[in-house]
Length: 229
Image (cartoon, rainbow, N blue to C red; front, side):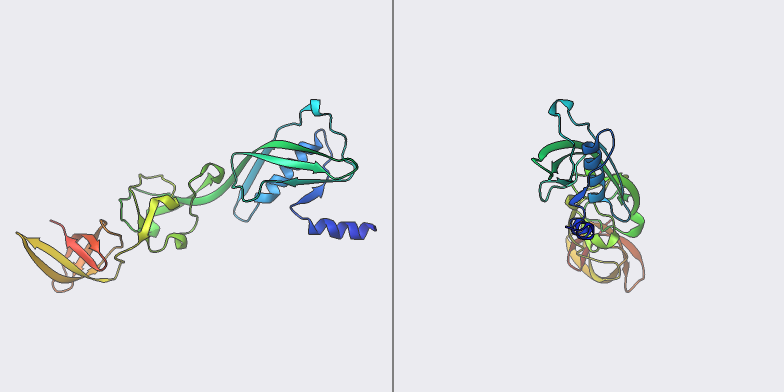
């Protein structure tokens, strides 16, 4: 097989097979380099540190191609086990423990948020976090949570996770809503315009369409809020 054909085949195996790495511990260096390539992406910073091969294994030098792999559908974790195989001659296979960190900008709360609140741009900021330690998931863009509201309260500095969000907003800013007021057991209704967004139980401000007065209210259903005292 010509050298040109070998190079073309190697390109087809990108991120699956890489040339053998020279150095004091080429197997560990290969596993480390391969794992970094697996998770490298725009906007991410990846670091990895592979453990040295146990010298008692007495692995023969790999004269051909080393191939690395992970179990399918395995999410990134702080500690990964990369299988490295040598395809030359009789070959060999060994698992290399690799410590992994993947830093990405994720959404963090700026201030306390209550259950039912819709998340607005001013409620969050982005911070670099190691996502291998965010086992409950994360969000890195506001459009991923558009129309969603919080399922539970969050203190400032919390990472927004899928489990922290409930359904879509029952009321959105700018919606025309029915404002219900309880006056000594008598229910009075008026029209209003929501100045915030939220799910059931969320507190927001509403402008009375007739008087122009802004009041505090709580969402109690689609297009309906309860005036608060």
